[in-house]
Amino acid sequence: DGGITQSPKYLFRKEGQNVTLSCEQNLNHDAMYWYRQDPGQGLRLIYYSQIVNDFQKGDIAEGYSVSREKKESFPLTVTSAQKNPTAFYLCASSAGLAVLYEQFFGPGTRLTVL
Amino acid sequence: QQPVQSPQAVILREGEDAVINCSSSKALYSVHWYRQKHGEAPVFLMILLKGGEQKGHEKISASFNEKKQQSSLYLTASQLSYSGTYFCGTGEGGATNKLIFGTGTLLAVQP
Image 1 (tube, rainbow over the protein chains, first blue to last red):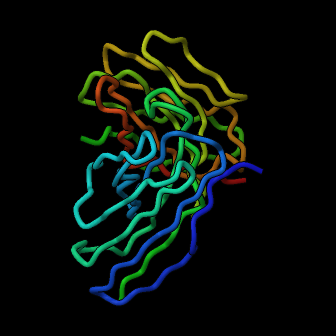
Image 2 (cartoon, chains in turn purple, brown; image 1 turned 60 degrees about the horizontal axis):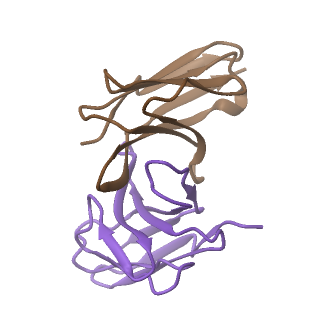
């Protein structure tokens, strides 16, 4: 079955450590996205990529970094510069432009920084 | 700037109807609607495009008023399975290929 996988489902880290969240899709989609979800704030865009080896900052990119070396993979690194990293992180993909195509979401990773 | 959704929360009995509104301060090219169950990923419901017609999906339909930069989601004869948080995502088009999501509307359907 085609879909998006994120791992791990739960992640605990100590303050000051960098952590990388995995996102893989086998839908052959060109575009991929990372969102952060906090209670009462909906989904906020961190980074997005429309094609391999290219990505753009979203609305809350500070303290995060990404890479897009393969079409199917879009890992997100939460760095120590992110002031409040505890949140639910969702990865998504779409077949084309975000404004025209539905986004398929992965199951999410819940990150807790202690 | 995030689109504003109203109401923030609504409680229904099975069989009742509900309307969820999404309003933006910017000109829109598209509006997307998603539903998210607690602890799960959002699931796509429908897209409405500028110049398009009202969309329908079983007993869930939506409209898009481009001039007012507003969209409404209509849930008819609600079922228990409709419970969840509903998000609208607005697309401005042009060079900005991204959606801006609203803060969500929590819908609880009770027996």
